[in-house]
Image (cartoon, rainbow, N blue to C red; front, top):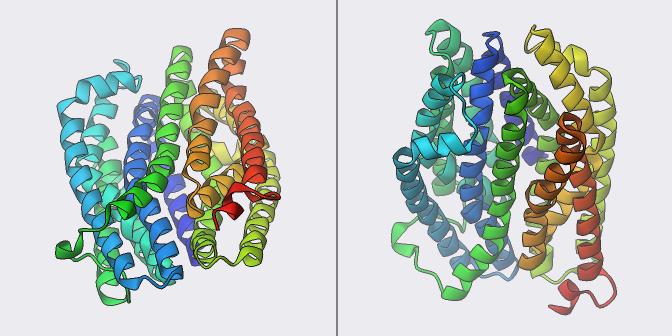
Length: 428
């Protein structure tokens, strides 16, 4: 439950962040920031490489009572993420023009996107590093502490957004500066919890050396986990590039629709992440029956919750979108997109369960396949086909179609891994 609450708070921030930016009633500003959204997804992806990869490895080590090694794996992940974030931040500044061009920034949106990009690039270190303690604290049962750190920084950002955007008239810069301040607080709290509360995990720089097999274990799960968010980045960038042809109002509408959709998806992610430590622990302890019950419960909760809340949001979509902007063209576009995106949220829930489950039970190939599917290979193939066949309508329906196909792939992989004589069972 603390994990779910933490993601709900993050979800509220995503909504309020977009809400305050949209209150400027400047479609080009909203579009400019929307075009830079993949940048944030990329940073989360890089952090997940060590955060989710590390938490999966640590959970299994704790289940095997290898406490000292679990602590050293955590230190390796923390400082690995720190080094990677420094390299990435430098690269983002060096190749700024090329990256902005790839994101689909136009002359009308450049001034807003450029400011937001530069400050978010500077925040890369804080964002990437935060993903390690956010995930690894849960392996010791410190989910509440993880939630407190995340929620405190998020609440701080919510209060700073209107102050910076409207009080100091900073616009796009205000939104990104509030994000930096929030992550600085989150990182500080989470690091202190790791030092003061954790029994086994630590961030001692002199204990970052771990066996090669453990590095492989972290990366074999962490890379597929990070690929999920890389695919989110890629999918969003491709969607933006397809929509910008139809005008900034369509991109602005997409930005609003996707943030409202996070009402469902962030909670689904919370349920999945909350179960990861349990799945990894029981897999490491070889408790077959309990493991299957946890996975089945996860599937039921995710699909059921997604169905119920999606129906409610579809019904109130026009009123909900109108809270963000008054421009009727943007409202119509956002409402139409949102309803299409929400139709297949139960399938998103299933895909998330399968993806995080494969990460937790050390099935890197299956996790990788799921990671590159929904907003990666399947989405890319579908959007090019549907856009050529149906134009704008094809662009909108591409993601729902990809959601259904990805869930079908995940179910097939699940049956192969956990059916009679499944590979995951044979590995025991």
